[in-house]
Image 1 (cartoon, helix red, strand yellow):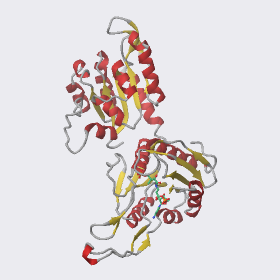
Image 2 (image 1 turned 45 degrees about the horizontal axis):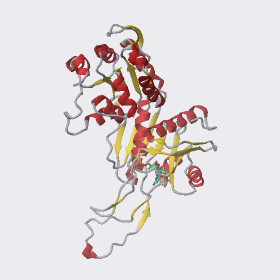
Image 3 (image 1 turned 60 degrees about the horizontal axis):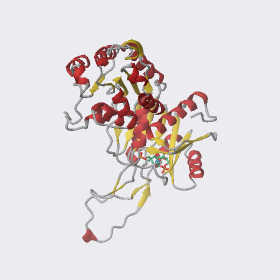
Image 4 (image 1 turned 90 degrees about the vertical axis):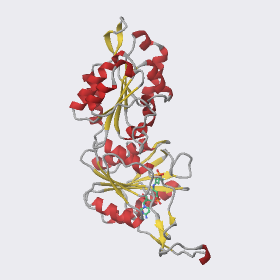
Length: 405
Ligand code: PMT
C-alpha cells in the first residue's frame, strides 16, 4: 500500500465533527489518510483539526493547487486505495449521483477509480425524501457502498434514521472492504504496458498508438488486490502506479530484458503492451537530411517477448497475452494463444469504437488454453483489468476450465 491513501471526503453537516474520530482511528490502524472537504464542511470543523490528525494538509479549495507539478484532485484520486465520504449530505449525494463536480469532494469522486463508500447523515425527513432515496439508489447501482444511517436523536431535534454511523463502525467497513479485495496477496505479477519505440535516426522513430492505459489499469487493480506488481512500461504520459515497482524501457529488446529479469521471481506475466514488431535494420547515427534524398529503410523483426518468456518459463508461472485484432478476432486470438504457448489470452477488437488503443474503455474476450471462453461487454479498463485478474486467480487455483469471470 506504499504511496496509497484512504481519502476521507467531508460534507457540510453537523456530523462533520465525527470525521475527526474517523481519521484518528484510520491513522491509528496504520493507514495514510488524505482529507478532502467541501467549503461548507469547513464551517463545521476546522481543516487544521483534520490536518493535525492526518499530518497532511486538508484540501478544500479545488483551485488552490499547492503543488504545481500535479493537479490535486487527479493526483489524490490516483493514489486512492478507497474513498469514504462521511458525512454525505443530501446535496453532496445529489451531486455524486448526477456527476456534478463543483467542489473538491465531488471533483475527486469523478476522478477516482477506487471503491467508494458514502455515509449519509441528515434529518430523518430529508433522508426519507424520494429524491434522496432515488439518488442513493443511483449510487448503489454503480457499485458505491452506501452505509445505512443510525437511528437515534438527531441534531435538528427529531429522533429517527439519519445519524452518521459511529466512526468505529465506518472503520470496520473500510477494513473489511480492503481485506475482501486483497485476494492476490502472495502473487508477484509482471505487467507490460504501452508502446515501444524503435529509433530510425536521432530524431525519428517507429512506434504505435498504445497509451499504456490498459496495462496501468491492470497494475493499479493488482496492487489494490494485494499483489506485488512490477510494471514494465514503454514510454507513456501516465503517472507511475503507486505501490508498483516501475521499470521504464524504450525498445522491444529493452522490454524483453526487463520482463526476463522481473520474471526470475514472478508468478504471472500479463502482456498488455504493444511492442513494436519491427525495427530498422540499422539506426542512422545522424539525422537523415532531406538533401540526402529519399530514405530507404529495411526492417527486421524484433524478438517476440511473450513467446520467448513463455518458452523459457519456470515451473508454475502463468503467462497471459493480449491479441489486438481488427478482423476474425476470435480465430486470430486462438491462434496466438496456441502459437505463443499461453495460459490465457485477452482478445480485443481494436477496430471497435471504445475498445483498444488510447481510450478508457475496452471490450474483450478471454480465452484459456483449454477452450474456456468469456466475452465481456464494453467496460472501463479498470473493470476489464479486474476480470482478467480474477481469471488469472481462477486458473492458478483451479486449473483450466470454464471461465467464471
Ligand atoms: O495501451 P492502451 O492505449 O490502453 O491500449 C491497449 C492495447 C490495445 C494496447 C491492449 O489492449 C492490447 O491489445 N495489447 C496488445 C497489443 C499487441 O501488441 O497485440 P499483438 O496481437 O500484436 O500481440 C500479441 C501479444 O504479443 C501481446 O500480448 C503483445 O504484448 C505481445 N508481443 C507482441 C509483439 C512482440 N514483439 N512481443 C510481444 O510479446
